[in-house]
Length: 433
Ligand code: DLL
Image 1 (tube, rainbow, N blue to C red):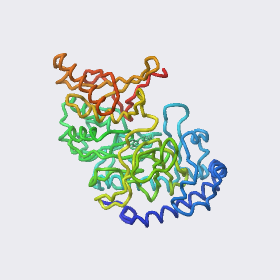
Image 2: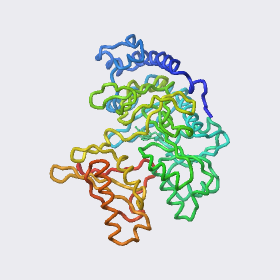
Image 3: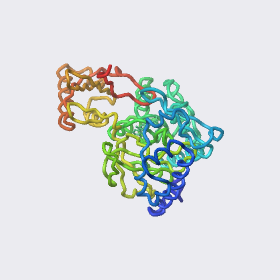
Image 4: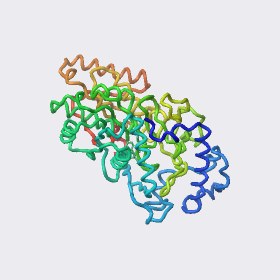
């Protein structure tokens, strides 16, 4: 079902006309209400009147995470605090969190976009949605919650953690959909099996999974272990939270960007130049309807490409490909660039390995080194040493052949590596420790 048929199936020209009108409004508003933008536009020599076409967007300066930090906590809000009804924050790895604010209308827009996302996953008011995204400052929990309610579905506000209880409710409440990170769903599947639960016999039909990079191979594994359809949802707190884009169950290939609310661009992360449709680069978003915290040309650091071909589901919004990584997650091992998700794809193609891995980056002399730690299945673990050595060799060879990187490989016994309730941390960087 298409939740907002009148918007989600607009012809291309109508989408672009709507985007331009909304872009002009937001650019003028931030120029007059947010000191940071006025200064940034002035020093770039542009005024709101210079935006006469969508192409003119590229005249505007970028906004980056550091700008949010410099204006911590509320400096980029464009409405008085009395109009803010909700705050969220993302912790990040260093320093102060990034704070975002919402007006009443922003919360309603967000709920609508999440309801759209659930509908794109084939869900209706008759579904029961088990929400294991964390509730709190993280946008996952409340974002999915409001969307599920807006759709009219029954929502189970489970949040993360309490794994045994999660399994119990999955059995007893019979949810038809689950929201969590893909890595946590695999962990739940494993925990369920240990409790003697047949995870395939649950009523679950679909997973709305995101908040971290994951590969198509990981999707296959999840679908196999739980007998569900595993769909990809994307978003970031700065832009709104989950529900900036979502894969549809009909296409299952690329995520529809909600273009009536966000304008996406792909740029070369090194030069900042806008790349032609279809090329891979850094995703940049401009929000065109947000009231409290509009963002102009925000550099996400997420790497993907836009897919202009029309999807078979009938939605006309442009799709983005599954995120392959973040520009700041990219590893450079002896000059070769690799993303953790590429390593994930290679190792998950090899029989006998579990979808639990960690990448240890270190330095020997002046060279960076990579060690792949990956769990083997119970069955392989009980094999002879020689078999394990062969498996190690195979991983090394495949990683070298496909990615051009020489890595050390360490096979780890089942269930040895850390599990995560939220976003998985795949890379341990020992170089700066
Ligand atoms: O992770 C919002 C969210 C919650 C999205 C629940 C989906 C589901 P942040 O904590 O601000 O917000 O982190 C945003 O997470 O820039 C990406 O690097 C990454 N990310 C989010 N969704 C995906 C995805 C939420 N589907 C950052 N695939 C983003 C890959 C994702 N990476």
